[in-house]
Image (cartoon, rainbow, N blue to C red; front, side, top):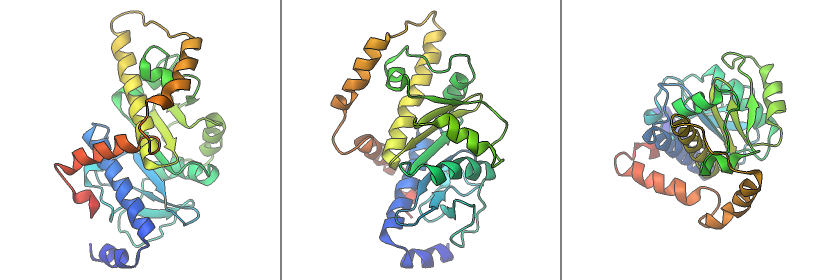
Length: 253
């Protein structure tokens, strides 16, 4: 795309790096089976630009997202580049409210995975019945389904229901996770997705064994001892990007 090529020549290195990291994340999500046609979103704040963030072009599959075709918008929905692609109103409405009010949140991912939607659609939501679910015990927020998220006034309730938590199950809807970086949001989504998948498998076999609050507390206390240095999800995300690169590096463009 000629216009994007000319913009890249004058783009700050920090923005291009952010674009590549976010584009890689879209490809990783697709590789792991978390795409949903042309829907769902991962957004990332643009470093050094107050109120600006990147979002996927509406109409493209996750597998088609590239660094150059990500759309840069502000928190009021105005395009900040001459990208020809539109932006999904549902994605903007939901993500912009968090980017506006949560300075610690840099990356947000929302998906409609089968497991995420299923667990968000049952009484009790996620239960502390498996290793990954124990990661999130007491740390999951819930927001009742109000229909497709296109009304700005719903944002007040999303923020209120999220509180101090940074992972949410949108009831009857799916997964929403947030991180201070792309890798952190990725690994949070990966663990929550695994927790939901395993809960579904467990409940199909019989009555799940619930982990006690005391053991959950020990588990959450000790999790950091089993992480690779470099920040939450960094090594995990880089490993997934290497897998993507084995078959397609076009996300880098």
